[in-house]
Image (cartoon, rainbow, N blue to C red; front, side, top):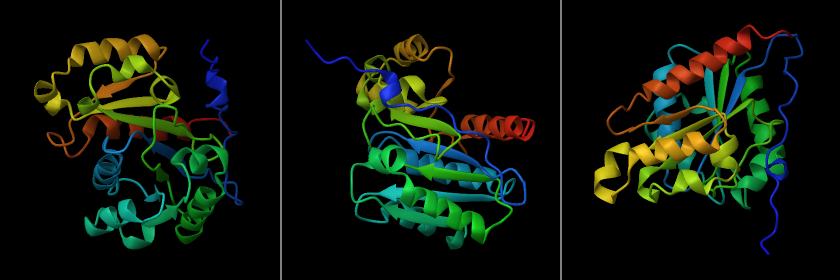
Length: 229
């Protein structure tokens, strides 16, 4: 018999609302997770370009042995260099975002100290599998990115990343005709496993501003601003 898997083993409860030592609400922290090549870094870059003029924004990237993703963001000048911090996990990506979040917390706190007015921090995980999820001690909300090239079966495979993330992004919809993926099936299956949580089907090639995802982020920031302390 296959082992039983409890979603609670992979997803913890949201943490209490964070405040700065001065009592000011801290920045909203959004985790970006997903498999290798799904478009996490491209999405982070798009959100920086779109939301950077509106919000005081910074990014933490995770790679196992390199600073590849942070270097990509710096080369593309999506933010000033001092707003981008790289974490080299040296281990499975989900370990550093869920099991031992110390290095990522240190990176976030460094950015907060460097930029006291921060309103938004994106924390991009290294490429992982469908069990990847963030600790809510590290982030406030989670976005999980999959791509059409993986096939239209991916949403129904489930896993905490697909089922429990606050937002599921199905990227590279422009590739659907090339790989024989049915976007209607992906939408249907995602809705079936996500318990009413939102799913967005996007193509960052066709919309490099990631407008729909940026709108979702704006809504999270607005919702946070009206939450009681």
